[in-house]
Length: 308
Image 1 (cartoon, rainbow, N blue to C red):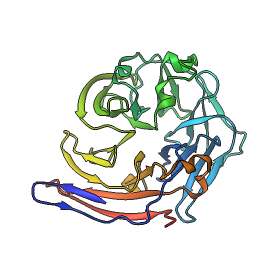
Image 2 (image 1 turned 120 degrees about the vertical axis):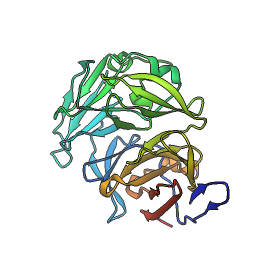
Image 3 (image 1 turned 60 degrees about the vertical axis):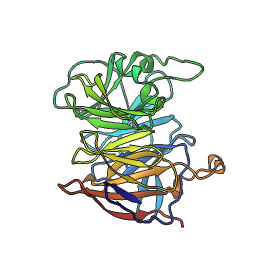
Image 4 (image 1 turned 135 degrees about the horizontal axis):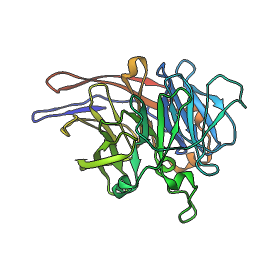
């Protein structure tokens, strides 16, 4: 339910039949039409969610360790892979399964007019100051993914790859020169971070004393933070409200018509879900939040893919 926080009251709305998803389902992203795509990291599959049939449709089943996704302006899907050293490939959904293009890292430079895709979370805010040395540019020349040496060289630490683009719960798009919001998973805080012309993180300021797994922004600049519940902040850091969900939210992304609908992916209810592939029965909450000029929170809530 969504709770509007003010001095006098909290408006409460019940949410029924909410269920959970597999914890290995991650990196939600939207195509140009607002359709939800996501990764099943365990089975190394990429899915598109079909609201009409309430199921995930396999887009790619190649064993290429997909981790994070991003769409360019032409409709090609960029895939950050755990496989190899600095692997990013791209393909057009609907194309033959073996048709894909491997992107080569390019030296970081200012890219005016292009969007950058950055991690929605980090494991420690000092990681924000690490220099971005490389970029992966989409085939249409409209977007790019900044990367550091650790990713391009495939560096290992304690048996795993520490690169932010691999550990993040998802990627968010931004235009260099404008701030982005990042959540620090380790100290459970959120930061407002400047983005430099080459997509590197710049100066950071504390945005909220709450943190979680992911953040998202609506068209009005309001910030949604996946903590124990979904917290909603104004662009200046004022807490506007809270969207209550039955399980811990792990990923947020705006999609649907006009990208005005917030999709919330939830943590599973019990550990038994770890051994099941639930991608064909993906469940999530779909919330359409709207804010009046006075800042009061109202909303329309619809449920998609609910199994009861």
